[in-house]
Each structure stands twice: as C-alpha cells, then as structure tokens.
Amino acid sequence: MVKEGYYFGLPPLVLGGVSFLLHWHVAAAVLVLVAAFVFSFFRDPERVIPTEPGAVVSPGDGRVVVVTEEENAGRPGKRVSIFLAVWNVHVNRSPAAGTITRMEYRPGKFLAAMRERASMENEQNVFTLSTEAGEMVFKQIAGLIARRVVSWKKAGEKVARGERIGLVRFGSRVDVWVPKEAEILVKVGEHVKGGSSVLALWSAKLVASNLHGMSTADADANLTATGKRS
Image (cartoon, rainbow, N blue to C red; front, side):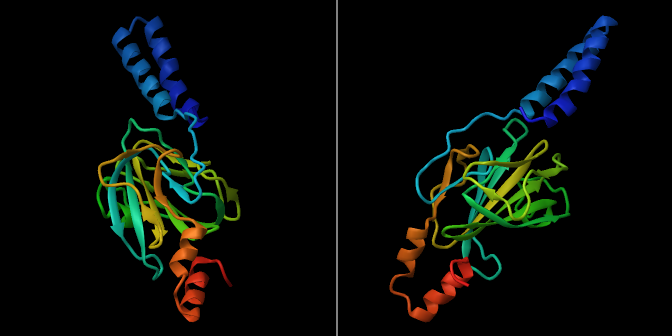
C-alpha cells in the first residue's frame, strides 16, 4: 500500500474504534468499512514487467475504452485510453523505459472519466517520454470523483518500463499516445493491468524497418520528429 493510504484510511479506522467503545455499533461498522475500502484503494501490488523489446505496457489497471488514430503536435499516431474504476489499483506506471523530457500539469474540468472529452478537458498530468524508439506521451487524467492527480516524477528523470510514477485518487483515466509505427495489441473492452499488460509494440528496430525505403529527406524528417536525430 502506498503511504497516502494511511493518511486517508487511519482516521475512519480510529473513529470506528472509538464508536465501538461508545457502543455506537452501526457507526463503528460503517467507519471500519470505509477504512477497509480506502486501504484497498491505495493497495500497490507487485507486477511482473514484460521484458520483450519494444513492449509498451499499460500505465494503469482498468478497461480499455478508446483505441483511435490521433495526431499529437502534428505527428500521426494512435491513442489508447483506459478507464480506472474505484475498485481498480490506482498506482500508475511508466509505459516504457526512457527519460521524462517534459511533465506538464493542466488544470481542467472533472467530467466522468469514461467520456471522450475527458482526455482533453479534464485536469491532468501530461508526460512526454523519450525512448530509444522516439517520443511517446502518456497522461494521468482526473475524473468525476478523482479530483487529484499525483506525480512522483519530474522532468529530467529516467524511468524504467513499469516503474511507479504516481497515482490518481478515487476513479480516473490514463491515456497513452504512440506514433503510427507502433502496433496496437489491445481492443476496446479489454481489461488490462498496470505494468504487466502490453498495449503495443514499438521498438527502434520497428521504426527503422518502417523507415527503410524512404527517401533520405523523408527519413531525416521522421528521425528528427521522433527525437533520434537533432
């Protein structure tokens, strides 16, 4: 369990104990159940991280609600969105190994996280991650109940695939954007686990194979866009 769980779970547990001593049994039972839910929400199980080259893992537990083609900063690519219900593990993980080149907090609305507009309009942390294959983007997105996105990382830090990077409290959404060269392996409706479920395959070898046969000018432009040549 992450340490935030103690801050939120201990007060109702203590109040439940006091209520029991005062023979307020109904109140005691409710408070203990609330504490149990909070402790469960902040659980942080270990995960087996895939070692397959180019594997892009899920940043969180939940259900895939969107798989779509989408541009990012003018670059064609694909987005996978995952909805985290209140009973899911809410610790978020890095989808790939690399360096966080940018971490931007964007204030916004608190629409239901299952809604398509949540990806653009809700409060969120946006991570730009530089990997051996190029740049990818992933987001922590607040929801109707989740009103706090928490990042444990900052720009300039290196992360490993599946490494813990933060959490969103009480129901939320995570998005992953990868360039068009990536091969998406999941479909809408599938359930995934943070750090262990593979969302896509996207490796430097795959990028190189897609560049094969391009003109020199086009290849240079593509490499520059993905961060492999400056």
